[in-house]
Image 1 (cartoon, rainbow, N blue to C red):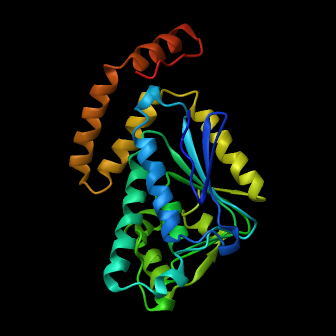
Image 2 (cartoon, rainbow, N blue to C red; image 1 turned 135 degrees about the horizontal axis):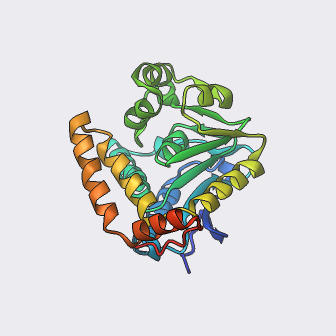
Length: 269
């Protein structure tokens, strides 16, 4: 399938995964306006692909070109020339990208090597999982520039690491290394180098490809929906999703294969 051509992104289907590389290595892959527009355009294509079993891949891997950075952050040089109104437009456009990544029916994995600061950390947190090389560094350094997080950091970081730790990271603007990010739950898994991170992410997508596409998609949607609900409201949503899962062909095939001690072949419906 043709996923489009972009000025700042390299988009390749590799096995079961769609690998998206932010490619501005001379600028450490900073989120210039063009990168944001390219990511927005790609998510527009992906949201139009279809749902669940119609998808040609089972996961999206987002990474950065070069050895120094996943995405170093927002483009500060561009931001220097922005008015307050232009800054808000920039913020809202990238926020829309992050919401679109969360709305995709397949998991998205951030494969982080080097710096993931500010907007780079926020892009990673919009993904379902964050895998990182041991030289990765994370942080929300906006206060060092007289700014605040603009692409979701004040919302998603607390969900990942808890409100107290999120406040310390955001208020101080400190960067944390990969080991610390893994310890506090920001990072799912650590790898030795950039190549291993991407390969690890692709291996997880290959594993996901053996599961029910309908079930994985529903789990992603359900977990996003219940995040802001009370326990009782979340349980109600879960019961409804459980009901819907019983009506799918994937459930019929999964249960049949389990009873027959066979490997299931999920139709994705």
